[in-house]
Length: 324
Image 1: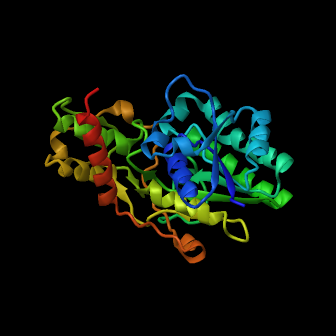
Image 2: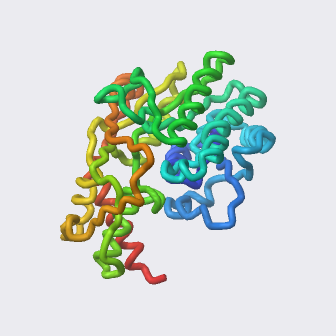
């Protein structure tokens, strides 16, 4: 019998890459999807997997729909990737972020405990939980200090996953993923904001790119690499938590330099610092230590940042050149 997986957030960047990975491994893949007025399926189309997945309507605010999705899919693996995941928005919508990103994960854990406690569960945790870093390089033992409503909500979901694992014996693991990008990244995230703007500037459609703190540093990897780590966690005999990162940190400034250089431009001629884009509480630097993932999962990042930015640039250059 083939394995069955249920993915919340299947229409997002990670969900689409994970769906393709699991389909290629022979899984029956179900996507838990909220009804939206706008088209949210473009990533699945771009990876040519939309017709290969089964979409099940539901919402992280509705426990009953989660239980029905578990019953319909008979999933042996559940990947909870859905969230209000844009950090900047979390200050404007802190209650929604708490409800969806934090309590939504607990609803899924509760649905799992009720409907299928033998299934294996993955929670998408985040490096934003480290926030105001307590150690130069963050690993599974680094104390958390979130600096945004998003980070706080994710931390609640993270500790709830541990609590359900220890209280009810669920095979529940968390991946503490550092920043991971791809050509499928949403335009609101800084990496995609940059590559889209560079493509438009190169095409003469705009002249400048407005950003906030370009000296912030992040550990950026490729989402296509990172979903492999998610899958490997659920293949382990014992559930656990893992930092997933490249072990290299780069500033937004340097990322801009790489992107503009891809089309022969100097970022200093086009980037404008705009105070409107500064965060109320900044996370200055994040740098992950993926040693445990390498030792126990046999996983390590394989796509350098320069290659990743090149992939994103080529995709946005094609999008900008394509007639409307």
